Image (cartoon, rainbow, N blue to C red; front, top):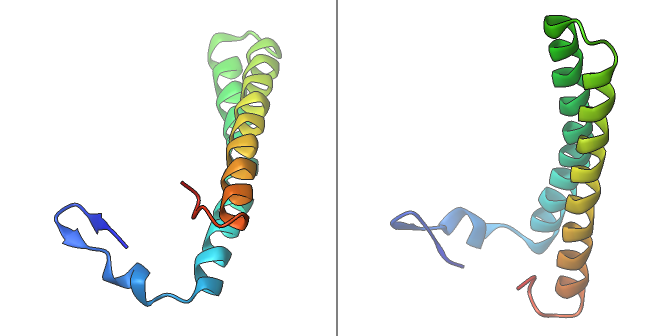
Amino acid sequence: MGTVGSRSDRQQDRQTPFLRKAGLYLGVAFELPGTIIGGLAIGYLLDNYFQTSPWLLISLTAIAFAGAFIRLIHWARFFSRERDGNGGK
């Protein structure tokens, strides 16, 4: 496939297409909610620290939702290019 650093990525070459797709889908499944939960957690902690409840929680959660939505659009474009046979490039 390619190189990771200065070595070839032999492990990825040995994976079946099913495992590659499963890994990508699992990545999406954890990345999107993780982004939102991260925004919630950081907003909650900052609200407690600065005593600004609930403003930082709300604003950071909204920013996290926007970031997750943008990542979802990137993933959708990637998967549509992969399905069309362009290899996700």
